[in-house]
Structures are given as structure tokens and as C-alpha cells.
Amino acid sequence: MKKKLVTLLKNSIAAFLSAGLCLSSSCTKDVSAPAASGNAGVQTTNPRAATPVGKSIVLRGFNGKYLSGENGAQAVTCTRPAAGSWETFLVVDAGGGKVALKSQGKYLSSENGTQAVTCNRTSYSTWEMFDWVESGNGKISLRGNNGKYISSENGTQAVTCNRATASDWEYFTYQVVPGPLSFKSLNYLYSISGQKTVAGQQGMQYWQPMKDISNKYPGLWGEDFSFQPFQGTSTMAQWRSLVTSTAKTRWNSGALIALMFHACPPTQAEPCQWDGGVKSHLSDSQWNELITNGTTLNNNWKARLDLIATYLQDLKNNGVEVLFRPFHEMNQGVFWWAGRPGPNGTAKLYQITHDYLVNTKGLTNLIWVWNLQDFGSLSSDLNSYDPGSSYWDVLALDNYGSDGTGFTTTKYNLLLNKAGSKPIAIGECGTLPTSSLLASQPRWVYLLGWAELTQQQNSNSAISGLYNAGNVFTLDEMTGWQ
Image 1: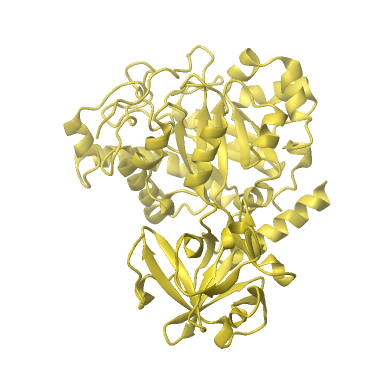
Image 2 (image 1 turned 60 degrees about the vertical axis):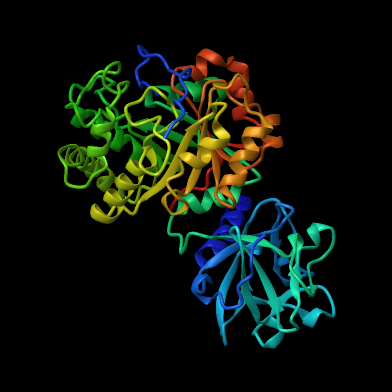
């Protein structure tokens, strides 16, 4: 098993290097309050300013599938439901306003339109040079030296370069792959996407019970910097030190680390209460002050970030990578930070927090997880709460059946469409998915059972069945980070 995982991880690294809630059982998970409602184009023949030269990309066809170089072993296709190393292309400046696309060390060739497109050239010449044509609505097309356009053929046959004009099958959307990736754990998630799901558990006191029930430890450990001290600690500093020290232990054992922050509002000191603290509301004027640089509330928030940054820095110093999930369930209607759609809403505070922790505090060990809850408004929420693709690495959905349904194909597809080639995850859940459900929705890279709800809403046999399933990874099957 480990040998197979190492191979998967190497493939992933090769691709991408080139390119609310209460922690205490005395509190109740509030899942019932959604946020209130609120706040074919013209082609360009000289698109150089918009061309992502020097970056690695994935290309998605009209059929929703990814273009694959097929490792140069056969003709190029557009049939892949997920993107990996064979579907990742480096955009090379070929001179004269043209580009070449390189995958697995070989170049894409139009074959001058005389046969199917290949990706097996060790260098580029005229047949490997393309015009990058912006087609509007976020779409591009590729025109070969023969004056013809590359066509996905809608995935029904090998890709060609013989179309005189571009239409649906000749249009592609593209996404820049983050890179170079230095995150071992993020590379790992890419490597298992579409194949396996890591079982995770929130709350340090629920770690051992999972082993007692299933004879396996979770592969992902989740905790919270929180609004109050827990587990016998009496100060926030003691609690956060315990979280940090345990995170280091779990990381060194090979587990993924996921941290969140049920923060007190910037209008209050910490610790604070659950009701009236975490679950409270800022007025519009207070919110505008919060997102305005240099104001009292803005400075209060950054001072609070300074407090947790100390512990995140300790983790960085010890080589621990963190799946960091701030402002979770930002479309939830009960948290002080949540329920504000639009560019100056919750997404803006997420951006401010990201930029402060990464750029000002230098915390480059954070893998940013953007998280929503599964309300009926999910389809629109995925747009109105999006902080921007450059601000998140993983898209997670908290699945509590908040819309009256469970792990539906509709929700899964909504996340896939939004994430593109990025990993998607079950950020929290009470009722665990079954292994058969995960087999039908294989792009979930991890799931996180929520604290006491895991045992309250699932039988021991259900927990054990999931943890021992062939398509679920637990700690004993993790490859480690050394």
C-alpha cells in the first residue's frame, strides 16, 4: 500500500512542481440558520498580455473533461474527469507571439492537422507553436501553425487540429496550477484525489475513541484555536500551546493537520462566550470599520491574529503544514463573521486575514481551506462568498443536511465545478458518508467527523466499516512527511 502511495505522490509532485461550532460537548452544533440574502465572445488575435507564460495550467473542454497529453504514449485526449500530471501543461513563450505547451517534458504538436494531436516532441518547432486566442467569457482557443484550431472533439475521439473556425468543442477554460508547490501534504491530497479519501476527526479527545472503535487512528487530526480554553487548561495560551504540541505529535506520526478558529469578535476580548460571542452580530458600520485598514476594529482583529500567529509560527518552525480553515461556514447566518455575501462581505475579511498571515507574518506553512455549509443556496453561495481562486487551495463543504438532503450528487458536482483541478473535501459532518458513497463521489480527498457528533450520529459498526474500507485512508496507511 505504501509503495503505491509513494508512486502516486511522486506523480503528483512531478505535475505540480512544474507548474458554527463549539469544541466542548456542552455546546450544540448550530446547523439550522442559513445566511440571509443580501449583499461566445469576440476572439482576440494578439492576446499576449493575458497569456499565462511561464505558468503551469490545466485545460478543460466543453464536455467538462480535461485535456491529457497521455504521457506521450498515444494521441492527446479530452476525456479526463480530474487533472493530474499528464493533464498539466507548462505554457512556454515560443516567440513571435506564440506559445508552446509542455507536459511531462514533451511538447504538444498539431501534427499540422494531418493526424490526431500528440504530445511527444522533445523540442518545439512550427507544428508545436500555437496562437493563444482569448474567446471571451473566460474561454480560450489554440490555433496551430496551419491556421486551424485544436478541437476536443467533445471527448468522443482523439484531439485534432483541423477546425477552420472555433466553436464549443474548440473552446477551453484554463486554470493556473499553484506552483511550485512545496507542501508535502497538499501534494499528497492531489495524488489521492479521485482514488482515496482520508478519514479525519475533530477534537483531540475523540482521537483515541476512533482507534478503540475501528482499530485504526484517523489520518487527519482536527482542532480549534478557539474562543475559550478546553481540556483542563485555564488560559487561552495554555489551550493553544496544547493544540500546537499535539499537532506536532500528530504530524510527526504521519497525520494531516487541520486547524480552525472559532474566534471571538473584534468588539470583545478573549476568552468570550459561545452565545453572544462567537454567535453574535456586527452592525454594518462595525463591519465596514473592520475591513477598513488602520481602524480600531481592523487593528483589533490583526492583534488577535498576532496571538495565533505565534503558534502557527511554532508549527512552521517544526515543519508542520496546516490545513487552515478560517471563517468556516461563511454562508452560515449565526456567526459574527458570516452571512455577508459580496466583495466587501465575509470574503473580504478572509482576504485581509490571508494577506496578513502570509505576507506580514510570513506563515508560508498554511494551506488555505475555503469552506461553506450545505444550504439550499449553495449554488449561488459558491460565487457570492468566493474570496478568489488565489486565496484558497482546497474547497471544503460542511455537510449537515442543512438543505434537507445529505451527500447528494448535486452538491458534489457544484463543488467540482467550482474547484476545477483543486482538491475538494468534506470540511465537517455529523453523519459519516459510507464507503460506497465515497466510491461514487471519489474526488473528496478527506472528511472530518465533527467532535461528539461522530459517535452520536453513527453506530460503532458504521465508523469501523468506513475506517476499514479499501477506498479510505487511515493513519496506518499514510506515508508520512519525512
